[in-house]
Amino acid sequence: MFLNQFLLLAAVLFAIGVYGVLTRRNGVMVLMSIELILNAVNINLIAFGTHLSDPTGQAFALFVIAVAAAEVGVGLAIVLMLYRSRRSIDIDSVDQLKG
Amino acid sequence: MSVFAATEVLVAQNIAFGIIAIAIVVAAVRVVTTNNVVHAALWLVVVLGGIAAQYILLAAEFTAIVQVLVYIGAIVVLFLFGIMLTRARLGGENMVNKKMRPAAMVIAVAMFGLMAYSLWDFFGDTELEVMGRSTAELGQTTAQVSDSLFLTYLVPFEVVSVLLLAALTGAIVLARRD
Image (cartoon, rainbow over all chains, first blue to last red; front, side):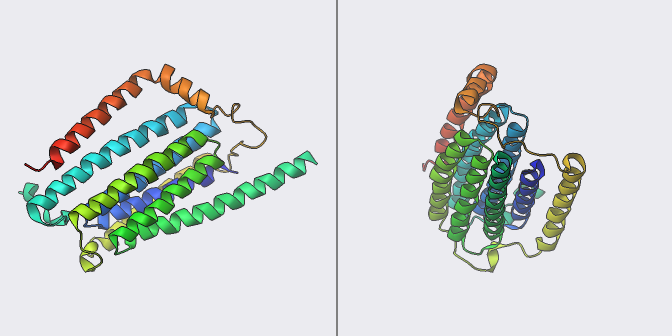
C-alpha cells in the first residue's frame, strides 16, 4: 500500500465536503458536509500516524472526533433556534449582518 | 514462500482499500447531492462506516471503534433528531443553491487538483509499511494510544473534556424553550 492512496482519498472527501458546504441551503446539510471535511482530516492523521509509527496520530484523531461531537451539538442547537424564530432553516435567508 | 504470501496479503489489502474507497466516494457524493435530507443522513452512515474500515486497514483499531460509536452511534442520531425537529421539507428544488453550483464545483475541483498535485509531488510512491510489522511496532495499539493521550497530551485531554461540558451546557441553553 502507498501512503498516497489514503491521502488522495482524504483529499477527495475534503473537496466533496467543501462543495457541499458551498451549495447546500439547509442548515443541517451544511453541518453534515462539515463532518465530511473533519473525517478527511482524520484519515490523514491516522495515515501519517501509521506511516511514522507514532500514536500521536490516533490521539489527535480522537481529539478531532470529540471536538466534532461538540460542534454538531451546538450547531444543531443553533439551527433549531433558527427554525423556531423563522420557521425555515434556509441559511441563505439569514443575511441580517450583511448591512 | 513467505515473500509470496506477503505480496498476496498486500494485494488483498489493496483490493479492500479500492472497494471501500469507491463506496466512500460514491456515498459522499450522494450526501452532498441528494434532495432527501433523511437519505443524506443514511448515506453519511455509509461514509463513516467506510472510514472506520479504512482505519482498520491502517491498523488503528481503537479509533475505528470510537468512530463507529461516536459518529454512527451518536452524531448521525443527533442529525436525524435535528432533521425531525426542524421538519425540513423533504425533496424540492430549494435544497440546493443553484446559482452557487458551478462556482462551488470549480472551487472543489481546484482544491482537489492543488492537493493531489502537491501530494503526488511530495510523497510520490512512498510505501506505507504496514506489512510484516505488528501493531505494537507501528505504535498503534490501544495501550500506546492511551499512554500518548494520558502522558503527553494530558492537558489537551482535560481541556477537551471542559470543552464538551461547555458545548453540552451551551446546547441546552440554546435549545431550551422559554
